[in-house]
Length: 227
Image 1 (cartoon, rainbow, N blue to C red):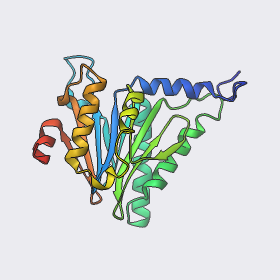
Image 2: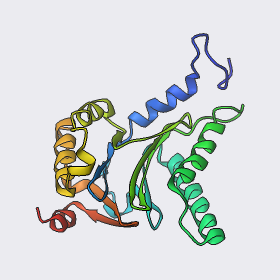
Image 3: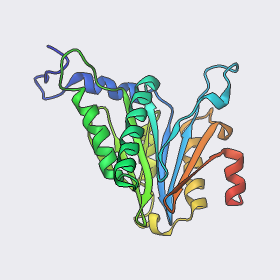
Image 4: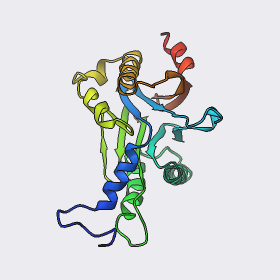
């Protein structure tokens, strides 16, 4: 059986193996609040000798859209570069930021193509595309198969099942009522419950609102929200 063939029970095993690679990546989550999207990623450092500023989990794609990934870092780098080129080409041609759904579709099509041809393998990375446009806030999740869905809140990476179970506890209208501090407190509580070695100082944080992005370390963000 080749990597592009279906198994007798209708699965493509290489895609499922790629999803297991995603689960080994550090946890990242995004949640809507009244006015925007909060994105938080845990940067796990394998060595005390590592220069912490060299490890980034959240990447700006355009002025109104960021991307956070979990899984194989080298795979994510290729897809981040693709997303930036697609967004830049759209801006040069049409003089406006690319529609987020269009951007996600273009990147997901490339991910899907890697499940269909011999001599290739699926990208071992899941991604969250987060941003705002025309007064709306958006969170899209893509997986190694090339499938994507839109969410009000979601997570990828290590302990993702537990994270999503906690996100299910959110009230139905949280996206319209929660402040940025409410959403931040919820995610910090979630991260700390899922990982006993969790260190808030390792977090990378981004907020998307009013078609702009702002990035923070943990301490700076606490000052930003006054908490």
